[in-house]
Length: 181
Length: 149
Image: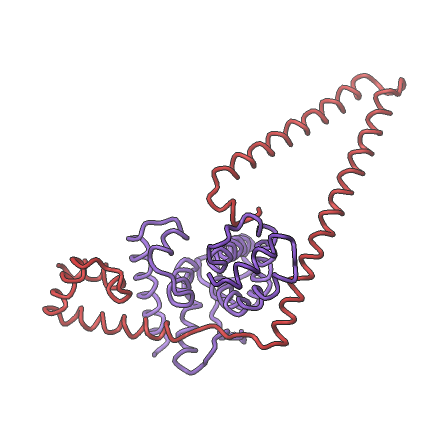
């Protein structure tokens, strides 16, 4: 973690709300994008990522300075998204009964930095995968986490990370083939 | 190495997460199996496609709105805490006074007084039990440090 971030977190731990703003601004895009993929639709991604920042603020005194902020925040965000998915599947208001989200093509904004036909297709196929697959693909490819970090975050052995990631990629490949790419 | 084992290790190979011994066995199989070579090529293309994707960075105006949303929730959080605290104190005081009056009123039957006291005692026991359970769960919950449930 860089020195500026450590200093900002120390100021946050002293109760200075203004010091939290640069952290929120730095990670807002990544947080909203991650939430969009985890939730399977970008509609309440912003709300979920903001809620995660609020919880991070409330628990900032427990944060060990010297550690990186984003992985800690990402764990909070993942838990919020998981509980929202659980609530959604209980209500059965979206097509998540079998663990699949609706594709992102129904007028949803695609939260990618660059867009072309190929990326758009991959993104849409990604959104049709079950939540556990979306989660591990986001961790690997969007958050650039190593297997060891993913294993610690998900509380599973490294071998399970490798096989889950492989199954997720195979599922994505099948979704892309079905889509005709 | 069988094709099944190759398949299990393929993602680890693409991500550079195999041990040296696994990598050598994997590459030896790759030399001899056309189907696995094709599968690996497809997997590498997919991983490259995924690696190319990064999330959009919001503009200054969007960031300002985003931060305002977070800040408002932080402010509101304090408001809700004060409101809840005030509501709990007020309700407790009201309930205490109502029970006190009920117990002292000679016109109220003993049965009702006993019933109300049992009701209150039951609620207190349930609350303490729930509180204790939450505290125990919190101690063993690995996410307790990260999430305020």
